[in-house]
Length: 205
Image (cartoon, rainbow, N blue to C red; front, side, top):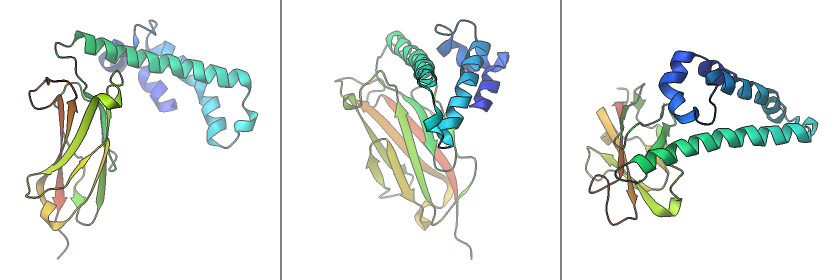
């Protein structure tokens, strides 16, 4: 949280990446948000170090209030994006994997490359989050391993694959497809499609 506060306090970073989402609720900009996060740090520390018993009622109320303000600001931003969209359908808002890669897509067809090579025998886990203005019962998420025959498939927000020799190559590719329950879709066959690519190394010897 300390690092996040420092990042948000940088005017160029805030203006480029966060202003559009937070300005309506935090008109004073990154400095205002940094102050809010700074106030939350000691509360976070008490909870993280099993000192919750020393947390006062006032601190608990302050934490709930500030966290709710931040969540509402982000939620309002995505609600506005949906209303402005010619095709109001869900998109992925966060994509992550167990290798530490985290992405925040800006469109409905994100395409990312893993930073580090993977190895046979490893398990890699993927997780996606969807625009919260849509309820989970309004869409389906499906996964597939591409570029090989009989690639693994799955459903839901989480998908895991144990890497085998058949996955070895320069582009081990996994896709996550988002499909609303509406009779139409933003891209005919889907509303959002995330493609994740990795290099998978062969086993030694």
